[in-house]
Length: 90
Length: 454
Image (tube, rainbow over all chains, first blue to last red; front, side):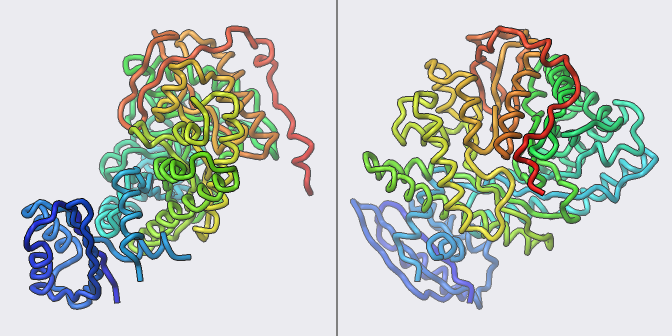
């Protein structure tokens, strides 16, 4: 299973998680884990998702989510999990 | 499972501290393009490079997108052209025609530099080697993306002083040929002692004859990441300092290893090495000099600089070696002047001189790099500077290099602007005393006693 990490950073507002989750559901991307914090009004969310049955390519998903983020004033970034695994695990 | 803290740390390194993959370089052997007919040789070179690199840019962009890590440069290195063109090039202009083919193919593929317009003459020069060297001014002034390098010495062979003398003249001539662009040609020309076969960084990248048909070499970089990590241990002792550098170098290099393996898989070309070098850029915060300041110096060049650089270089290697299955290239800390804002500031403040930079090259990975000197510096003086640097490399069994730019029409106190990653530099004074009689002796300096290990 190839996991992808989605990070959302920006000013907190209503419906951030809803918008991201709706997009993921519409595209058959399964959420495995969500963690979220708010520091000084700044919204910080990390999602681990499984793209095994995803309807869209990684590049398209990444571009779509970036655009959704821009629409609600947050930055959304998609990265394959391996970069974090490599850097933080021996 | 990966924690939010780890994800944030990685992304802060990328977004705020300039962590990036500095280059994915495909090394290509052109030995099978050798032909006695120049036109056939040129066609074979063109076709082989195009065929091998057709998916390079696309692959780099894909990796960049999927991992969220910038890949700043995609580049090509080829077999030293003196070997490839030896059979068909009878004049310097014949060699320069091959340079034009390399330039054309680099532009078509979309890489910003192609390295390997090179000759390996550490012991002696063949007729072809000499022709290639003499063609460098023409080649670099009539092309945009071609980089040239010449290996002038090694620990095993000693130093070819005839070639050292010749290169002093060639550097001056290249400066003259490109004087309209502030002698930019010299920024694409480097001379080496102990040149590595698998260096992915320009201007010195070439695909050594010991290499396979095609290979992926990757250079990572993150001076800003190391400096930020060191900010958190200000005032702590050397043990803590060294451990921090080592751990950070490990993380940075792991990214390089991942990208190298992924690029290798996608392109179907074997993975060669990761080059661990800390390579600065002119961007603020992306500076090796700033790390030296964070270690405790007022400016790079202050007393203590050589020791600080030695420990930095060593810890980068210790951290990096475990992070990658194959390490090679130059691997260490680069100390170019024009490409590092902290170094430029140190020169302007009067803290950093050519002599101090020479001392620093004894303990870092390369040598005198991107240093602008007055345009009226004599060719023999440049050869003397090169000979000194080659001697450091030969005796210390390490790679050393000289990439020096005599800026025609400019003198000490003026500034030269190269643009882009090459940056800008204040022109540094050179020792005014002569070394003509030394340089003009001719012949070669024998290999040092400790090279005889058989």
